[in-house]
Length: 405
Image 1 (tube, rainbow, N blue to C red):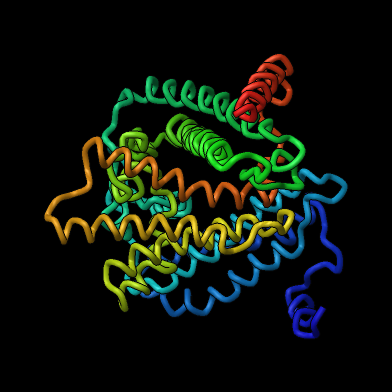
Image 2 (image 1 turned 45 degrees about the horizontal axis):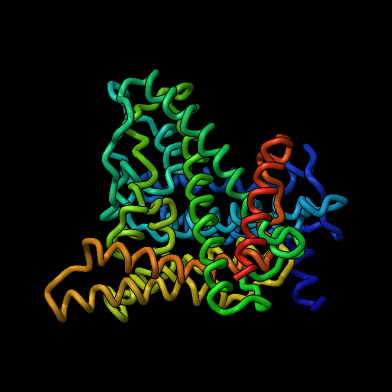
């Protein structure tokens, strides 16, 4: 280890060997960046605090780095490496969001609150800290909000969220297990492996990878939807927020008729503003709308790459850059098509193009995740032996059938 790295660890008071989670370590290493995150959120909704925010942000970033360097949840438990992934992701978002708040020259303003409530700085801070999309705030520009189809009464809304959370959790577990059993000893384990089986003929190889990618995308949709529903339940039931504050997370992405439609409207917009802040807006200053689009996708690529850093090290940065960068190229290409022909990409031809391009590009990103060992994490249905066995037998039989071609 270099002297500079040693001195940084000394300055940050990072333990000489990584530690596991307990109350003392939580209070020492994890709580400080979380509290600082809420502290900066409080400052950014107040007048004349930018100087203080600028002074505090380096400390916030260092505390987040300190938490990452201090913990190792995989000590004595290889599967704990996935908790390391969640930690790195959380600390990255803390550093990125507080940087965005630090550079804001004006206080952030909330314009949607629960009915009959009075403005409260505390509630605004709590909402800002967990509101990644920016719905109801002035800082999220041109955010698409899907049309509400759920019941509007509080009780029925929460009931719908409970049913949705349970259903999507179950389906995500089934799909996750299905992906694992396409090849359980390679990319279905924490050792990782490619989804492109070079022992198969060209057509079968890429048909199989397309099937794996499609299942993985459906799985990702279900996981994100289940997490969103799980957040809705306490927010509306306990914190008494209005259902209107929790619009749908997705807008039927399977109905997208262009790449722009898929990513700008129908897929979840949770980190949209963060990605635009990190790279989309800076690149737009030099390259206009093309820079904004490509910058957003490149920031997303960096984010997904950082998430995989704690895993087995088999994923290369270009896995995400190629896959998500190609998504940006497709979106820019659609705009060029509109400029040249005066026609938008839409309709049945647009749907076929979109599903094909999204699947091809995501094959690269899913391959990166697979080689990183992401699909080796435990499945939600591991404890349901009959269901797991049924999925295992079905997938392995289908995979064996594919290999006969």
